[in-house]
Every structure is written in C-alpha cells, then in structure tokens.
Amino acid sequence: MESVRWLLAAAGVEFEEELLETREQYEKLLQDGALMFQQVPMVEIDGMKLVQTRAILNYIAATHNLCGRDLKERALIDMYVEGTTDLMQLILMFPFLSAEDKEKQHALIVQKATNRYFPAYEKVLRDHGQDYLVGNQFSWADIHLFEAILMVEEKKCDVLSEFPQLQMFKARISNMPRIKKFLEPGSQRKPIPDDKYVETVRRVLQMYYNVKASV
Image (cartoon, rainbow, N blue to C red):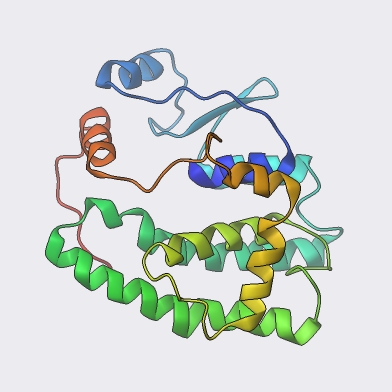
C-alpha cells in the first residue's frame, strides 16, 4: 500500500486508512464482497472498491494528470514504473526472509540497483537534461523512482554516490511541497517494516510458509 500512499500524497489527495490488525477484519471484508480477488490493498475511491495495486495506481495517476500528455509519454512512464517496480519487489519481501536469506537478498538488492536500474535512470536524466523522467513534467514515474531510491538507501545509505543525476533528482523531488510534507514526522508515511509488522501480516493473511530469497 505504501506506493499508493506516496502517489496520493504527490497528487495532493487527503485520505483515511483502516489498517488490518486482526484476521477477523480481513474475513469481514471477504464476507462483504469488498475484495474481488480476496487480496489487499483495497482502495475505496469515486464510488469504486479497487484492488490490485497497479490498477489503483493507474487510476490515481490518470485522474491527477500524472500519466503524461500523450500515448508516447504514457508508454515511457509505464516502462519506467515497471522497471522501478521490479527493483522494489526485491525489497518488499525482505522482512519476511530468514536471517541467512536476508544477507543474500541485501547483496542482490544493492547489486541490481547499482548495476541495472539506477544506471538506466541516471542515463535518462543525463541524456535529456531535464528535471523529470518524462516530458520535463512531474509524473507517476518520478514519485515511484523517488520511493525506490529511499527504499534502497535504507539498505545502503550511500547507494547514490556514483549517480550525480539521481542525487540531484532526489533533492529536487524531496523539496516539492507535497513530498516534503509527506516526509515529515507525523505524516501517513509508514516506517520500515519491523518484526511486529511481519507478525501482523502473517496473522491476518495466514502466511505461515517461508519466503525465499530472489535469484
């Protein structure tokens, strides 16, 4: 859900949230038919109950002019978002790994970020010399990349040391008023998942299997 929070914040949309703490809360949503595919997150917006994170993000971006000005720009934004999502997926399951697998996954995250994903975005920004990834206009791709940078920095604080364009990009995005506000203490931004979070997710979703590291 965190990517949805980031996009809502970037769009300037205020929202309320109900966090699932018990299995009973989840089962009530199922009984009420609120979860089409029996999955969370679910966002109630404009009379709809949307599930599937990509569908939710697409709708928010489209309704707040964060999808580009034409089909070509939208295609580029989608491409960049997909790449960033691939990187973020390596991090999302990290808290659920064993200690041994966490060590392997940590190395993989840093390796993929510094050798595959960040060099690609560094080149995009360097080649067109603009402030944002697509069309010199703030878009969903920018906030998604910014979120990914922060996630990787939680694993390696100096990960941007070899990427001057991304350093400037990060500074630029973090100083946007809506983003700056979301970064402040007391916002709806969630902290790094801890053991309590993992325990809650396992209990609510009955995730009793072991998660393996990516390869």
